Amino acid sequence: MELQNAFVNWFRNSSPYIHAHRNKTFVISFGGEAVLAEDFDHHVHDFALLSSLGIRLVLVHGIRPQIDQRLSRLNAPARFHHNLRITDDLALQCAKESAGLVRVEIEALLSMGLANSPMAGSGLKVASGNFVTAKPLGVIAGVDYCHTGEVRRIDSKAIQLQLEQKNVVLISPIGYSPTGEIFNLSAEQVATEIAIALKAEKLILLTEQSFKNPDNNQPVSQITTDEADLFLQNHPNMPDVLALPLKAAIQSCQSGVNRVHLIDRTVDGALLLELFSHDGVGTLISSTPFEALRPATLSDIGGILELIKPLEQQGKLAKRSREKIEMEIADYVVLERDGLIIGCMALHSDEQAGFGAIACLAVHPDYQGSARGKRLFEHVQQKAKQLKLKKLFVLSTQTAHWFIEKGFQPSTIASLPESLKVLYNPERNSKVLCNIIE
Image (cartoon, rainbow, N blue to C red; front, top):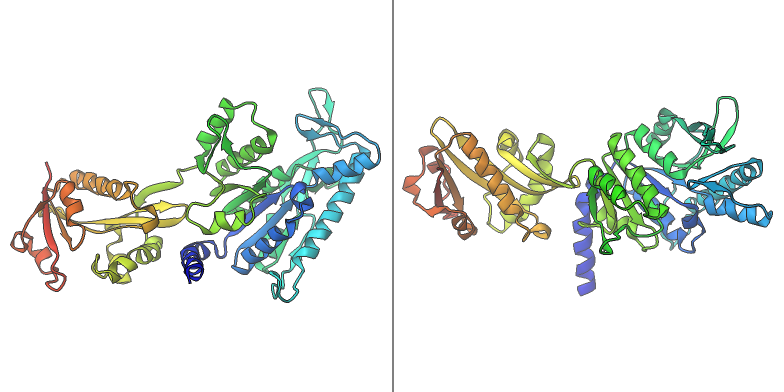
């Protein structure tokens, strides 16, 4: 029974993320190492699950170890400069062979539909093509990179067309020129440019290890682009396995991608844990802070209703209809965490009469105990001062003591302004509290 309850609770808690991610575009990049790993089929199962939940998927795979294996069998060296492969004629041939084989292997796994398997009934359709136009990297500081290239243009319209047809788009790190040349590309760069061109909601980079702070070996769960840039400056010797994805994340966010996730692909189920749990297991990079307090908008009404519904059922909050919240949305502020509303509060003010009423204070149970309620209150209190209100009132059934700690004093129904008296519900028997604003 305990296991059943844990599953039910997890599934219920994941529902806001399922709703938030539906019909969104995610670009997921993973290296050739992931393809060679014994558990790669687990990743494919997770990709299929994401697609079944209505997420528009673009998958970008790497081929570096596959090229190295082929060169080794030919007794040819793998040549690199500044972590970029020097793709001579032989290396290009190995790159073409590797890209073709890896793409076919991934397509085969995505096409599975055996009964009693995670892919049963998935019916995924996979689209690949010449979506990436490239140009040669050329000669840099005297080094000729030969057939190594960089992205010149992404055919975003063609990719969007495939996504609209509910196809999973699979892209190899190979680019083509208008003159018919073929170039070996960086998978991170391809994924980054695709995410930017598609204006994707998320770029997800499956890395070979977790992103930890070298100073204390602690995982970094969230970081802004400015903090990430400073982090790279302070740790110039960070291994490329983490530095390159971090640089890709910074570029993506600065170019309009909302969120970038670095996820250790060696952790089983890490992709699902990152996307469908409150705190995730990876590292989130964004241009703006991961959690922000801001004025509410009409698009937040669904999140506010979902947040306050349990409190209404427990009698802690008076019931509010969608229409009422919509009419009063300008009075609300919300705490948003990665697209989800985790806290809210309203200040209903009468500037002419010089008073305000605080209402609808709610913080998601998973985020209580971290002064978020205090943060909301202080924001609303500051707004009341800006409006030059003289008094603040609160009607509370179960949180009166919390407001008393914030300076409110017990009062009476008779002390309420007439507009608040008519709203008082005797059945709730709320405590009346008042605070004089100095």
